[in-house]
Length: 68
Image 1 (spheres, one colour):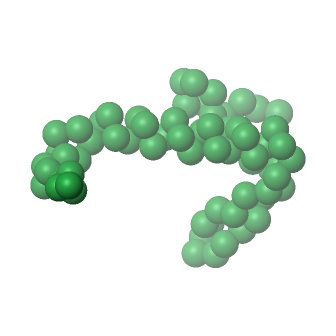
Image 2 (tube, rainbow, N blue to C red):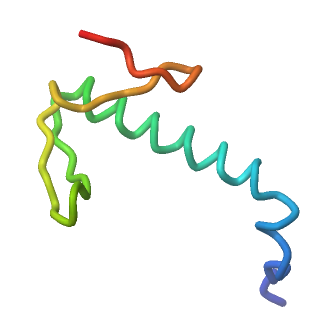
């Protein structure tokens, strides 16, 4: 069975779609962690920072972070 190859221009041709899919996946993962009360690790100012579930900023569908 031949392994599928990824074209060299995949991100050039489909960059916006790939970015939207990844953005959606990250948002869903953050929402899941927040709802389950789980912390997440983020990179901030050159350091790894652990955010508690309450500290996780999750954007709405339009990309805005709701104010508490």
